[in-house]
Amino acid sequence: MKRTALVQHLVIAWMLVIGLFGWLPLVRSVFDGESYAWGTSYFGLQLSGAGLAGDVWYLTLKTGFACFVLFALLRRWRPVGAMFATAWSALLLADSLYVFIANPEGLWFHGDTLGIQLNLSLIAPIIVSAMLLPCAWLWWQAVAEGAGRPAPLQPRNVRRLGMLAALLPLQFVLLHFGVPHGVTDQAGVILTMVQWFALGWALGLKGGGEVAVPPAGLISEKARAALDRR
Image 1 (cartoon, helix red, strand yellow):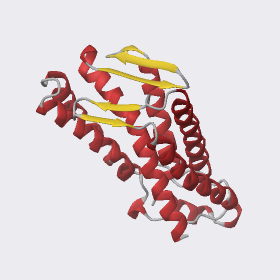
Image 2 (cartoon, rainbow, N blue to C red; image 1 turned 30 degrees about the vertical axis):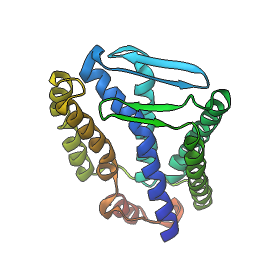
Image 3 (cartoon, one colour; image 1 turned 180 degrees about the vertical axis):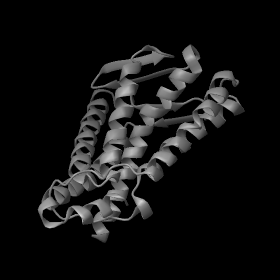
Image 4 (cartoon, rainbow, N blue to C red; image 1 turned 60 degrees about the vertical axis):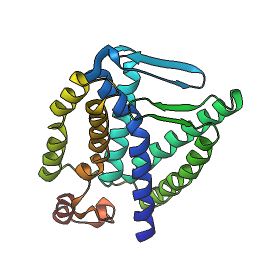
């Protein structure tokens, strides 16, 4: 069980990392407006936008899907969360291999606000392959344990989510009124990144521990309710 919990934490961290590339440009598109432009591609299909123009639907879909997977993993709905984490990682691996074969120098990450430029053409397939393995292993373990059902959000989770949402006005001020690529812009980006990574803290079970839940027929409703309050 301890090994499963460690692998699950690794998969959650991985989902937070790839989900950040939906949340951060989405927030910047909404708050910065047309001064912020982004772009990406999937299997040669170019996706881009500036402000709310362009393919902002893609950022919304990616962020929403990441939130769903994180909810499933963090709220004890592991078979569903691990399945989608595995599928997403497999898709990313296929896309990174496609880019590497089509154009070995064509996969770059540009973070202009923080001055980051990375060539991911070679390293991306390696990283994604390494993360696909724990995702698949966790899925295999979860299927063996049974489907179960997600633990509902508790007042503690709602309060924490409210705390993260309360940062949005400050993010708007920093990103919308700040100097492009200046200190305020950088502060807004860092705050948005911290906000996203704190989503694991906001959605997690009490104490962050791993709880084994027997199938519905082997546990009383009273005992299941007590577990769900965690």
